[in-house]
Length: 96
Figure 1: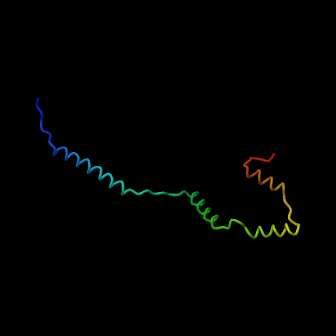
Figure 2: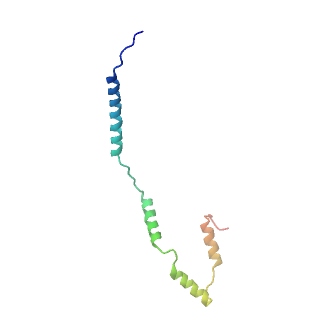
Figure 3: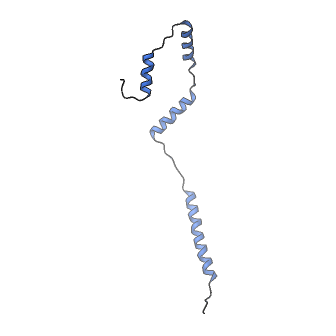
């Protein structure tokens, strides 16, 4: 039986070269930066969201006007108008 010597230096050198490649790859990955570009519609939507967030949730002047009309007895409800808006909001293509 013939056993040849194993050269440990060769194995160490092979490991070093692989290790160096992995380190270089990691460095190159960290140099890359992610970027994000918003479309025109997304920018408009973002602006609209900011405006909505800044506006009050309750339009107090409208509430006061309706309360005044209710107290005076002059407030009337347009039931056909409400029904029409409800149908439009439900996305039906036309009225029946």
